Amino acid sequence: MTDILIVEDNELNRDMLTRRLTRKGYTVRSVGDGQAAIEAIGAVTPDLVLMDMNLPVMNGWDACKALRAQPQTQNLPIIALTAHAMSGDEQKALNAGCDDYTTKPIDFPLLISKIEQLLTK
Image (cartoon, rainbow, N blue to C red; front, side, top):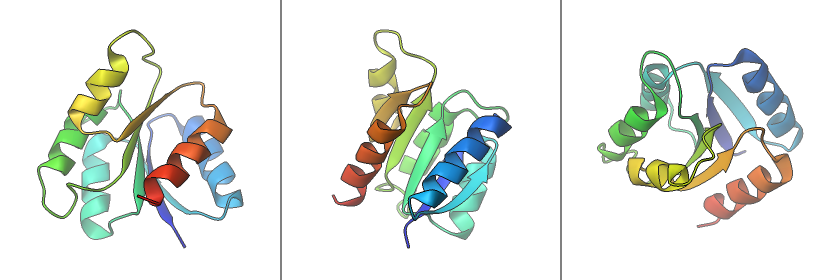
């Protein structure tokens, strides 16, 4: 079963994504900040990470950079989840190490498509 880690500080968003992804057959874990994500990934590496970019403790930008700097996580698929939808925000997420980018509110069918694409690479 595919393991997805959700990194999201908003409990409602975490719960909604967890329920919907679980219904799609994924195993889902979640944490509320970037530092907790790095620690969780160090313990058990997921198949894919959904990373909010505006997080407490350590933001998603820095967490992605830290994950890319480690040999065991340099190729871990990461999708940025963000309310930032301005020109240049997608490129900023890609530059931080994300493989893809989607804005909030989340278009769930589009997110599933992106997840499936990254998992088949």
